[in-house]
Length: 107
Image 1 (cartoon, rainbow, N blue to C red):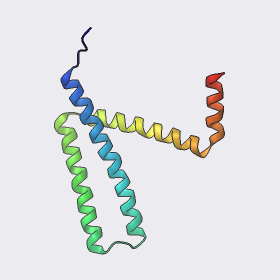
Image 2: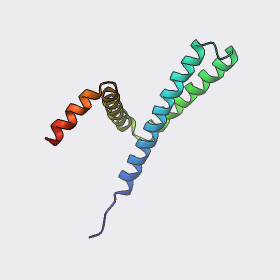
Image 3: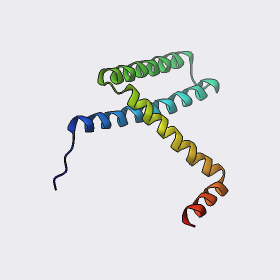
Image 4: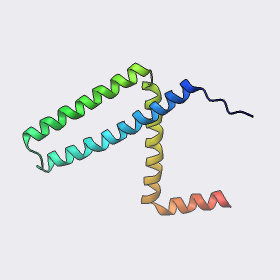
């Protein structure tokens, strides 16, 4: 039996994943930038350049999503990733919850 792959769907899925990952990285960069600004680690010129670069990246990502019709797909995947991260962080903060869930799953 041959595996049939919808090439257009595959491209859409891969692009959605890549754009979502870039957005997650962008959020981390923005958080780090705010920390550095609040800590006084950046000159005013560096703050301006960083702000402009992040704004350009945001605009480019919005354009890519609009051009390829993946805005909704990216939002859905991003939300799903956020839920997974929240769950993992919650279990790391509360290891007993993790143990309880593991016990219920195996028993």
